[in-house]
Length: 404
Image 1 (cartoon, rainbow, N blue to C red):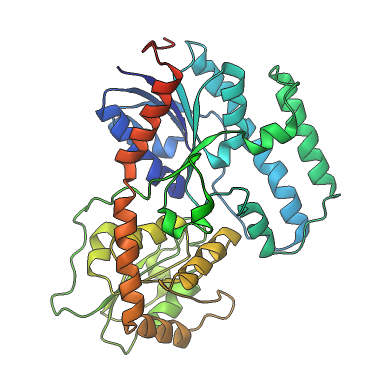
Image 2 (image 1 turned 180 degrees about the vertical axis):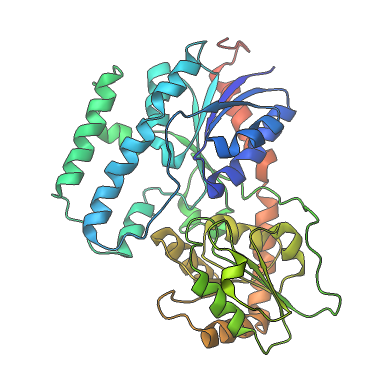
């Protein structure tokens, strides 16, 4: 029977891209879905047949590089206050009756868990990056790529105090912070295959590795008629304000018979790159699903969405990571033999050219990438994610009734 399902995704491309196909699949199955979002994504939500609701606050998608331990200590408190600001808007919508199930992004873990506890809702967490359990901690791995954080830092103490205050304000003062932090038996949908997850074999039934959604072709790009190899280059949506990087990439292939496709994003005007060789294309946006089927190599910042999209098409990857999570992803690319990585601080045209040519000529890399491609497609994507959500809402309401 139709259910009322509320989604709290994080309104950034890397998080919305895998979440929206799940919303679409649930709507297709007849469920009533309310998806909270920012104005940038509201029209997309409505186009899927779901109800769009505004968070009513600024959830900044900017992720500046954390350059020292002080910034690393302050980041959790900043994210807590930013994410908890969604509660008034969500509770206004819940005023008409809470949903049958709540789905929330890991970035919004604090308001998601609070709402689930407060309203007694079954809940599903969405992870657009690698997951954490008793054997692998994303938080600890992130810290490994920066200076050690002082546990006595005032921002850490303030974070704990503020979290307790938020719980108390919503009648959850008896809930221990340890219980709230760990999430108990919280169920998580992870948008990557288990084969890509570090320590993947240690994750139990609390996790379903459903892989990324499929990327439909937009038919906005055509490959070169002469059959030359293609390299697609992007810095994603959070670190793409680096025109000098794109100029370096153009320089790397200036004298090579490759077609170079640069996806710049919103913050770099193609005109600022100056004159480009005829075989170097600079786009603010191009559908990667159009280009990747024709690609020999994909060069990117190492965001999980970019990696999964490339691997779903069987394309080797060269990562140039910026954020700690991207460093973890790049390490997985190297460990699994799916490509290579470059240091953003020392990257040069020569190093880019050498890395692309080496990966392109490595048959062992291509074999492993094809094996991972099969893992990606076998994971199930949006269809399996919807199956898992339906199973949890059915278990929570075995009599078939709805809260509304």
